[in-house]
Length: 279
Image 1 (cartoon, rainbow, N blue to C red):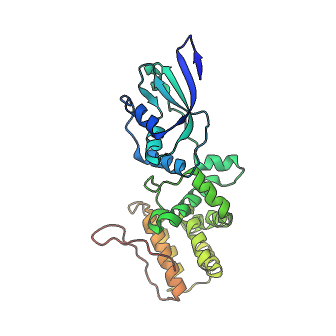
Image 2 (image 1 turned 180 degrees about the horizontal axis):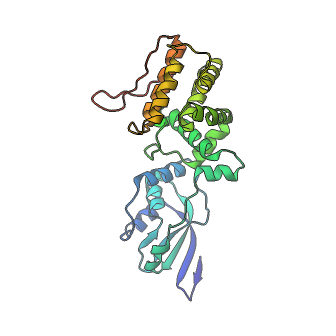
Image 3 (image 1 turned 45 degrees about the vertical axis):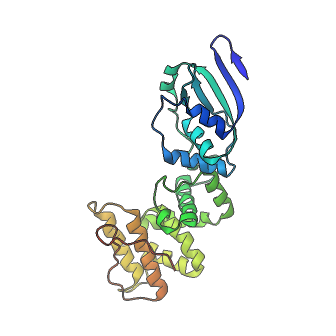
């Protein structure tokens, strides 16, 4: 423990147990609303053993009020894991106004530090595929904390699946030419080529160029529908609609259905569709 007698601050490295975290949270009377999604992300990281002592501290005022670190404390309780962490006590309560104003390190930032390229798109594709693998197709395309993927999980997934870089490279080209978000193209290119490499490459080559197809070809119908969605601001971009349309076109392509006049995917209303599984 380090104590500054002039300021009254105490800095201590501790093994924070769930019991200790609960005791500290009993004094959590002056803080922001708890973000359950943020707690879930920390909980998942702790359960997976990804927590590391990194200099970030639980900060407590001189009267015992928690000023910063409530989400980590709740995660320790929820995970049941003991973690090493710094605890600073003796801070003035008004210092809370200047805390947590920095920007958290996102997956794309970590990938940049590792020397990766196209990090924003790579991060989006890897996160989506990790969600796909764990929760299924419905979760893959959403930008939501309902399906948390920690940086550690995403990096581990990337290390196990380095060929995802090929899908990111394809997504950069096809996404712009086919009027579809690169994230969705990257996720589905990876999934389709792991169903059948030759068919997957042919599907996205045709989607990219629009060449070599006659009327009724499902990829031609898909290109037209994606262009309509892209050009009509009244429809608004919906990842479920776009991904659903692409998977529908893929399934028809694989089935040999060459009499497709129009592709539809209903998101809302009385009979909303679920995103189909790629076959």
